Amino acid sequence: MKLRDGEPWMAAAEYGKSLRGLGLNLLVRDVARAIRFQRAVLGAEVVYSDPDFAVLRACGGEWMLHADHAYLDHPMHGIAATAEGRGAGLELRLHGRDPDAATAAARKAGYTVLAAATDKPHGLREAHIIDEDGYVWVPDVASK
Image (cartoon, rainbow, N blue to C red; front, side, top):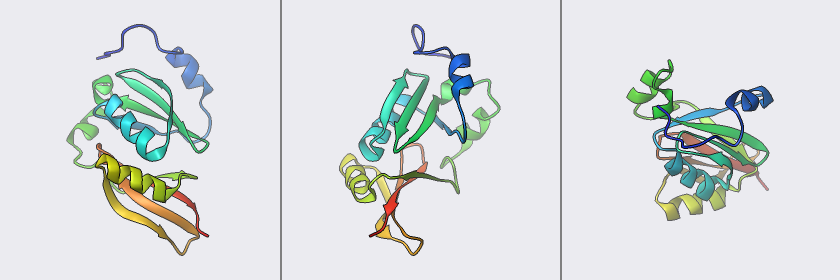
């Protein structure tokens, strides 16, 4: 069930045909709420958003958010509706986002910091932050 009034910034078929490489489409309970996390913690730019769908960009990457209600007839709906923590076992890494800044922003906004910014043996400084839908985001930069 769509909640959007009017037309999106481009036709779905046109946007779909423009996609290349690896794509991420995250199912979220509330698009506006998810965007608040994405902007505040990840420094994401909103390319487009409506109550059903959003496209975000940060650090050279682009991903999509789809509201659960827009997936009622989709095979993924049942999985998402019953999941306690979405994306269990998945790390959504945002290479180039300062993990110290992301951690500070997450704490200020009341999000869960699973692991604070730390230099790791694999050459990255990273943090693990959980959004309100249960996705684990890992902002990282090269360690000094």
